[in-house]
Image (cartoon, rainbow, N blue to C red):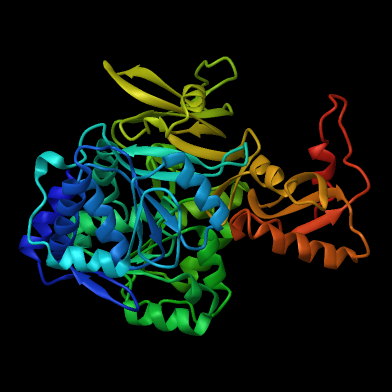
Length: 511
């Protein structure tokens, strides 16, 4: 499908249907189409054929989506940045992109690069420009549609480029998850993840492609059960899209059950390991809802495999003491397991998961050296596809893929992909820290938290005061989800026989 054509068709057929409904404002499909067209025409008049991406800064406003669509209708990729991301990290992204234009939909941002437009100006342009976008301007084919910045081992985020074709091929598949597109027409979709996290693509664009209504849940609601459950009750969600960690948090309250969401048709999970205990709880509380487990890194456009976790499958896995599969690959995707020499491995043998297919990214924005290390081309069934070395360990059995964690120092925590070295490099920027080694606390095959072992000057502070001060200072450098839960000061970092930090030994101290 072509998502821009599909949204235009929805605007003609269901113009008055609500496309996005937040706690503050709603937009119909007709308004979404008209406003994005007007803003796109303004962008194109001023910036012509320039392909420099546009930064879109904000949180869960429907006008974020207006800006996204306006950018791609004007032929420019967009790069979403959430207000929860520390400013110093946002500026790293701005310096990487060097945008001519920045849309500040929510919050405040002075990037000192490019023209900065606030919400008042954005609305004025969009609402008062009658000109429509021209299809010849649109992002298409291998043009970059969006750029999601993820954690990088150097301490600087790296931008994953997703093309229009990647997104459109992904949507051909995602509209079938948990039920066909006809079941999703007019359905209500939960948006839990910020738009700067690629999981949001699963709910945002699947909803728009299906003629559904997106309900963005603001971050402040997610820490207040009373308000959050009131929101969910009012939203009457049909398709739940989130990380397993978020639903685990909801399950801690007994009110989270089918009575709260009587029309829920399916849970769609991505971003981290889904455990058997979580699924048992969901089946008890929501006996009528399907549970879909998916897998895929940002570099392959959200997800590339899926499996419905049935009661029979869950019973078999639980009896065997195993982990849940992450499913079979979608059409035009090949999931293979390779050894260290790049040779495919047979069923049951663990190695690196390699993704080959029509939704693999073109690489990292402005980082050719990183792109060359991770991406390559591969022929399958007489056709050349892009391929990606995931760094994930896994194996295949009976056509199903099983994920067994990271090969390198990358982890997933609460659905966010985090480079351990990214945290460490930012920690040693603090004057009170000389060395830092971060290790994950893993239970049931899932990263539950992070612990940092550090050396440096505590001064007259107690260990608790030191830990609190480090966490507070880190908020200026990295997102909250990357800050280690525990900070432990030690006299020296233990070394292994190779002269490197002994992460295995430190991992044994985590509890």
